View 1 (cartoon, rainbow, N blue to C red):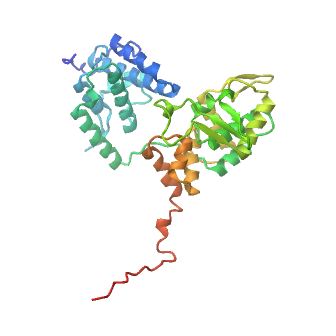
View 2 (tube, rainbow, N blue to C red):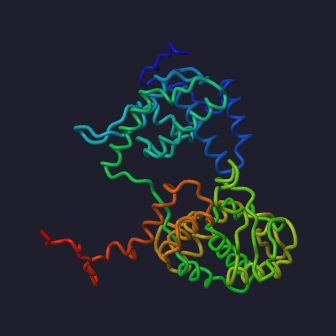
View 3 (cartoon, one colour):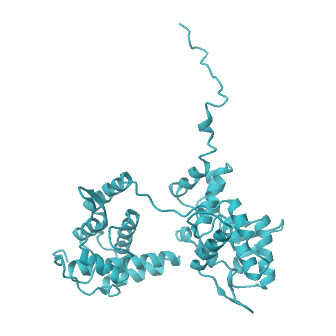
Length: 369
C-alpha cells in the first residue's frame, strides 16, 4: 500500500465511492455507531465517500487503511488553492475533478474551501484512530502543509461562511408573521423555543420530545437536553442539561401544545390539513427559519444556525457574561463562541470609550525629584 502509483492524467476509472475496502468500511461503521448526532454521521459519511472516490480516481485502486502519508499530502495539494503567477492554482487533474463532480461527490470544480479541506482530513484522521491504525494525518509534512495553507488562505481573505445572526428583535418580527393557524402556532413556538432555550441547533429542535419537557412551579418550562453535538462526550463543565423556557417563549409553546393536543412524542411536527404528521426534520426547521425571516422582510443569509449565533450575539450586546451564555448554549470551547460574542459587543465595548469623559488618574509621585 505504500507503493501507490498515481493514475496518468486523462485516465480516470469509473468512480464507485460506496465501494470502500473492508477495513475502511469497518472503521466507518464504528464511527457511525459512536456518533449520536445525525448531522455528524452524515458529515462523516460524505467526507469518507469523497476520500474513497478521490483515492480510486488518483491511484486506480480502492482505498484501504492505513492510507500512506504521501497520499494525504497529495490530497492536500490537490485540493488546496494557492496563489501563482496566473492566479489561484491547485493540483487536482481536471479529468478527475470533473469525474468527482459527475459522481455527486463534489459540488463544483476547483479547489475546496480551506475549512472543507481541514474537515475531510480530520474525518480520515478519526477513521484511522477508530481502527487503531497509524495515523497519516499526524505526519509532520501533512501538518506543516495545513498550517501554511491556513495562513495563506487567511492572507487571501478566505473566511468561513457564517449564517446571519438573528437577534431577539428579529425573532419577534418573525413570530409576528405567524397567524393563529396550527402551522402559525407551531412556527412561533419553534422560533421562541430554539432561541430562548440557548440557541438550539436545528437537529436539537427536530428531536425535542415531550418526555424531556417539564413545567416549572414558578411558571414556564425546563427542557432536558440529553442529545446534541456537544453532549456526545458527556455534560459540559459548568452547564446544565436543563434549559429554561420562560415568558413569551413559554406562552407560545403552551399555546402550540394545547392547540395541537400533543401529550407525548415529538414536540414539533408536520401539520396536515386534518391531522398532525410525524416529527420535523432538521432541514425543515431550517426552512421554517428562512421562510419566516423572508416574510418578516429581514435581509441576510439565514438558516437554522442563525438562531444559535443570534442568541450569543444578543447576549453579548446585553452584557451577559460569556460563561453564562456558554452554560445555555453548551459550547465546550471559548474559541468557538467568542467570535459571536465579540461581534455582538463590538459597539458597546467600554474599552473603546476611554477618551469619552476621560478621568485623569495622576501618579502622586509624578514630578517629584
